[in-house]
Structure formats: C-alpha cells, structure tokens
Length: 466
Image 1 (spheres, helix red, strand yellow):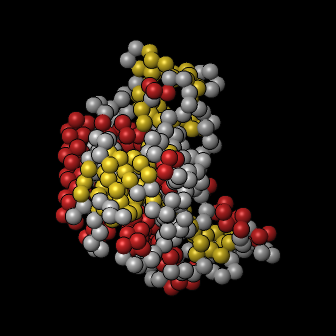
Image 2: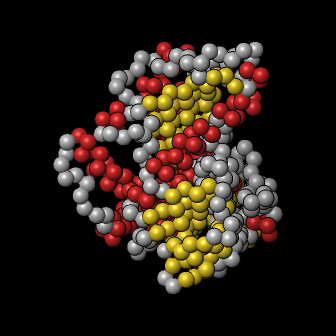
Image 3: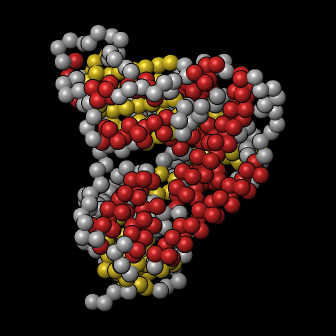
C-alpha cells in the first residue's frame, strides 16, 4: 500500500516535534504533523517556559529588597506592571513558536495547523475533513488540566488561564497541592496577589520526600501564602464580580479568582482511539510498551498522553528514541526509573532524583545523610531561610539511591547530580570529589556521617547520628 506519509504526528509539543524533526531531517522520512492550537505545546506556550519567566518576575521584588541588606539604598521601590510584563512575555512566546514551526518546515515536515483524529490504524482525519494516510502514526497530544467535579466548577480558572489574564486578581484561591499549585501560588503571591492555597492533604507535594514536603509547605507560608491544609472547596457561586467559595466544612469566602491546579489528564477524548482499537488506561492514557508502541502496531505514543513520567525532557527523549528505533534502525528505549525533576518555588527550589526517604524505608536498609544550613547570601541579608541537602545511600552497597535539594537554584544542581547517579555512583565517589568553596553544592560532597538509618529493620543497629 502506498501511504501519503511514512509518519504522521498528532501534536506539536516537545515530544511530537522532536520525533517529526529527527525522522524527517536525519532519516529522510516523509512526515506530516497536525497541531490544533499553537506549535510548542504545553511546555513552550502555557507551561514550563512562561511559568519559569513568571517565577523570575515574582522573585525580582524580593531580590531587590534583599539588596538593601547589602547596602543598596532605595532598591525595590516601585510596583509591578503586569501589562508591560505580559506583553513582553507574549512576544517571547511568539518568537519561540515561530522557531519551533520553522524548525519543522526546514526539516521537511508538512505542518497542518488544525485538529486531527484517527480514522483507522493508518489514517488520520483533519478538522477540515481531509484524510491522510501514514505507515506509522505517533500520538503526542499531551494532557490537559482538569477541574474537580463540584458545582460551579466552570467559574474556576485552570493553569492555562494564568498566561492570558488581562489583570492580576487582588485575592486568589489556588486549589491543589502539586508542583503546579505550589509554583502558581509562589508566582501570584510574589506578583502582589493575596494568595490562599487550599489542599486536602497534610503537606503539599504528595509523592515527594516527606521532609522536603514540610520545608516547601513552610516556605509558602513564609513568603505570605495562606496555606490551608485539610481544606477542599465544595462549590463555587458567582457573587458580583467575585466568586464565593463554599468549603467542605461549610465555611465560605469571596475571591476575585479561583484557580484549579488539581492535576492533568491525557488529552485523548474525541481522538478516535477506541474506534481504531487502541487500548486506553484508567485515566484515558494510551497504554504503550517499552518501545512506545500501542496495542495497534502502526500507532505509537509519547509524552504526557501515555501518563508515564510527565515531564518535557522525558517526552523529548521518548520522541527521539521512537524516531531512532522506527526510522533509524537504532533501537533505543527510555529508562524511566531515574529522572530528575524540580519544583520552581522561591526563594528556594526543590529538586529531586531517585528514592525518597519513605521509599528507602520500605525497601532499605539505607543511610540518610542530611545537611541543613542558612545559605551565605540570604543569611548576610538577614534571612532565616534554611537550605537542606539530602542523600539516600544503600547501607550495603554504598550506592547513592536518592538526592533531594531544597535551596536556591536547586534545579541547576540536580541536573549535575543526575549524571553520577545515572552511572551508579557511590557515597565514596561523592566523598572523593573536592568541594568548591564557598558554594551551596559543596554540602553534597562534605556530609561524612549519616543522620539516621532506615528500612529492613535498620540492618542490625542504627548508625551513630551525625
């Protein structure tokens, strides 16, 4: 059978764009790609990139205030101009979208700026009714924010809406406790909105290391966010220009805006997957094997639509590996077991890779090394904020199983830690590195004695405390 394309990609986010570009430019495949919204997807247009720029903006005022501790008089006086920042942000996103599009076109990819859905195992149907055939179809359409199923949920904003607000709300409720909720609460409070964060759990960032969760929760409060744990909205009602939120304990308050950051789900509804015979999971995710192949041999999927590890660099690696495997005769799998990540709260970020202390306790024995201190820069300026470094080490093999950093620029540090951990580094390897002084990162190679031992009945006896 003669196909219109060797590969057709549904979705113009990071994973789909990488797969399309590599297949076309490096392996000579005939590639088509359909994107229904803006090229670049969640990360570039309404996620990682604009969010990080907003984090920078939200911290600029605090940085100016910190400078007064270094003798700069009058620093930090002024106000934040949302309109000016938002206009500049929009222009930057336009530039990035253009770069993504031109990269595809220059690679020889035919771009269709409209929604596509599956017609069968080798056919996609565009929104204008055109049907195109392909030997292989890659679905990289990502995920979408979800609202909780409560009355009046349509009155609440989702994370995408933060990037299109005409003005900042005076008082805002952020609902959720994941990394998106924590980052958006940091942004809104830092830009001048009185921010309440409501989360049903006992500490934010469920699934992260427990000790680090407590530090992030405390930091949110320290920067002025009204963190309310064990709290969940039950309904939303319009009241004048605001939104009245009734909580599960029957209390109610009025906010200028409510933002739901209660998770994301794979964007598979209405995509024709069931009709094509593609198996879906409980959340609507496309079930794939280690080669990103679905239950239909000609259909593959990468990125958040598979609900494996929902991070942009993972989607990019999956897309590249797919292209190498299918079109380059270079079979490559993606190892999802050891992936670094960062939560961009401020002033301190949380970055992590590998096992948490709780996971180590369940499968140990493991030694836990912890260093807690006040960083030189903020200490001199009068801040009591503490940074925390944590290593989880196999008590029998000395292999470093986990690293958790709560401090300034933690994301930058964890990227470097991912390299030795991926190579199987031991605590002795860390100890052998000579520290760079004075730095925050030197604490990772100067922790000599474990603070405690966890798991497997602590392998005879707990170690001496540091």
